[in-house]
Image (cartoon, rainbow, N blue to C red; front, side, top):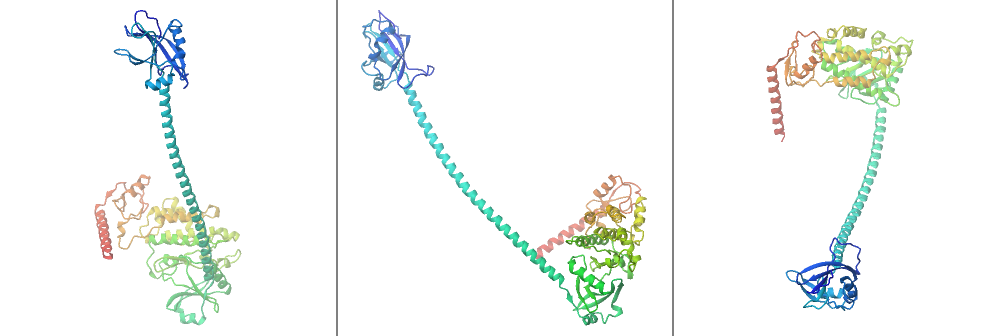
Amino acid sequence: MIGRVFSADVKLFLEVLNPCSPRNLNREYLLVFLKFYDPEQTQLRYIGTLFVSCSSRPLDILPKLRSLAGFCADEEIELYEEIKFEPNVMCEALDIHHTFTVNQHTIMLDSIILGIGPRPNGAVGVTVHVDEFRGQNDLVRLQIEEAKKECNQLRHELDNAMQQVNEFRGQNDLVRLQIEEAKKECSQLKHERDNAVRQVDELWDRNSQFILEFRFTCLEQATEHFKDLCKIGDTEYGCVYKGIINNTTVAIKLSKSESLFQQEVSVLRQGGRHANIVTFVGMCSEVSALVYEWLPKGNLEDRILCADDTPPLSWHIRTQIIGEVCCALLFLHSHKPNASVHGDLRPCNILIGADYRSKLYNFGMSTLFLQPGSCPPNLTARLPYTDPEFLTIGDLTPLSDVYSLGVVILRLLTGMPPLAIAKKVREAFQSDNLHLLIDKSAGDWPYTQAKQLALLGLRCVEMTREKRPHLTEVWTVVEALVRKPPAPSCPAHFICPILQEIMNDPQMASDGFTYEAEAIRRWLDGGSNRSPMTNLALPNRVLIPNRALRSSIQEYLQASVAKAVRSLNLNH
């Protein structure tokens, strides 16, 4: 600020650029602010601004300062640096011959005072505050340096990160290589396994084709020269004798004809082995004889009829036999490339072992007898089990065995003769009298299971094959019904007739039977008003907790657990 003062000293101030001032300066220029300073009144008054070069001298701008202040061209002006403004103005004289940069560097301050006129008494002065732009530039420079350092640090961290990424990629490549090696090894192992399986199959085929050849004298010795007392059966396939070879009891069948013998040997060579198919031991070509394993409980036909006063089969065993026959048929039907069909599935061709496990017998030879137009022996016994479509078109398929299985199921369920059995069961089912046909000698057969077996048997004996279920569908139903009989140590009355499990909450229904609470409630809630055991109408839907039975069951279970713990402790 510049002004003329006649009675007192006047000073002109040059101030630094504040943060709100324009930013169109570069590092070569400074912006100065001009003020009049009245030392008597200690007042400053703004006059104007002026851009100056950092390399210029205060001497160079004196004409401009005189013009801004309104002084004469030759009027003397002195320059001062402002040291302090309050409480008293303090300043030092500046050398007008030095540049602004040198002056500022010399005084180490951010402001310069220019004085105008004689100094002590009535002198006129100008105060010039130098812009802090250079200081700001230094700050910016420091910030830039800090930013560079930070950038370098980030670059260093980025380099470390990239190094880690590269290391990870290297590890990933290693893992990828290891995976590839593992895949190759797995593929090699699969290849070796396939070769091993193929070799086992080949050995099995060779073994299956390798049949023991017995001498006739050996068979004579085994049967005491085919003594009548050793004869146990005589069928269209041949006479069967019980014999002992190498201290092992076997069944020896003398075939009726050479063609039957060759047919059976051919089937047995291709058939393979299964737990529910009678094991073929060997043969004697001299007399067309076949040697099989011995099953002591005879055939299923005799067991249904209780021949020789044998006890009747329980419903548990009957259900088990149905499942085992179904498994054996699935095995035969799975043969490649062509399915093997039994063709003569009847109870007399189902043999029973000592543990009541059933095995199929005499399969694959029926085509020699059941040719269209021929009159096979024992037709009356075969006809009820024979597929009607086979009798008309002569085509034997797996569905032919399904028909025969359906008749076997109905026989095991009712104990009735096979002739017209499907018609009788269907009529009883439609009149809701199925419970009257269920074989009572089998025990308390749960009506729910009996009903399912009846429905399954009726589906299997449909006259046309298109309406019959495939064997896999039959197995789906049978598998759910096959239950393991209760352990001998577990009392039968502990078992729920519906669930076939030990009861947790026994409830007595109005039919006199005790059931698991959840099972009988589900039965009643389903809308049934008949007994699950007898199918007779229930007098009421009241359930009475059988607390005495529940207490007995709990004592039995606790004793079983204690026994198991004692056994475990002894073993350890």
